Image 1 (cartoon, rainbow over the protein chains, first blue to last red):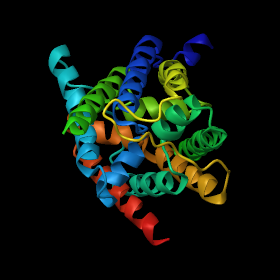
Image 2: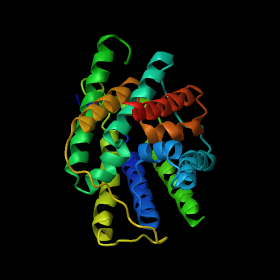
Image 3: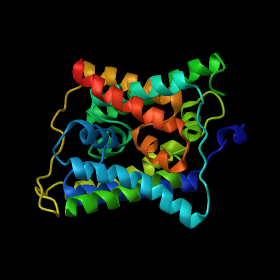
Image 4: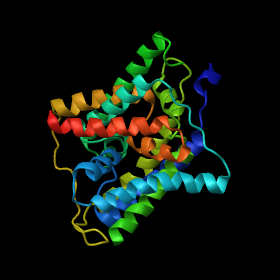
Length: 146
Length: 134
C-alpha cells in the first residue's frame, strides 16, 4: 500500500519549487505592489491597457525561467499531455472562463489568497480541487485518463 | 521600465519554481487529482512550500501602503462568497482535470516545445474573452 501512496511522489523537488514560487510572489508584491495571480496577469495582458507591458514581461519570464533551468541542467524537461484536441480546447476554454469568473487560479486563490487568509480564496481552492478530482475520476471510469 | 524588469525577473523565478516542482508536466497535476488511483501528493507540497514563504511575508508587508517602486498596493476588496466564485471555480476545476494544466504551467510549458500546449493557451484566452460577454 505504501508504494501506491508514493507513486511518482517528488516531495523534495515539490517543496523547493514551491518555495521558489513563493519567493517570486513575495518579490513581485514587494516591488510592484500587485499579487502574482497568473490568470489575472494573463487576462489583464489581453484585455486591460493598464500595466500591459509589465504583465507581458511577467508572462515572458514564465517561459524564459524554465528555458534557463533546462539549459543549465542540460535536460529537455518532461511533459506528458493528452493528444485529444477536444480535451485540450474544452479544457483550455474552461480554465480561462472559470478563473476569470472566480477571479483567480491556483496561484491567485490557492497561494496568494490562502496566504492572506482570505476565506473566499479558501472556498475557491477547495471547490476547484474537488471539481478537478471528480472530473479525473469520471474520465478514469471511461478510460480517458489512466 | 523598472516595473517591467521586476515583472520579468519575478516571472523567470516563478517559471523556474514551476519546472523544478514538476508542475509544468500535466501528468503530475493529474496524478494529484487522481486520489483513488496512484495518487501523487506532490502538488500539495508545492502549495505548502509557496504558502510557507508568502504567508509570513505578506503579514510582515501588510502595513505598507506603497511598494518599493512607489506604486499603490492593490489588494482584492471582495470578501463575500457568491455564485460567480463557486461556478467559476467549478468550471476551472473541470478544465484543470480534463488536461492537467492551469494558467501558470500552461504558459511555462511553451519552453517544453510541445505544440499542443499552444492550442490550450489560445483556448484559455478565448475563455477569458468569453467571460466579458456573459
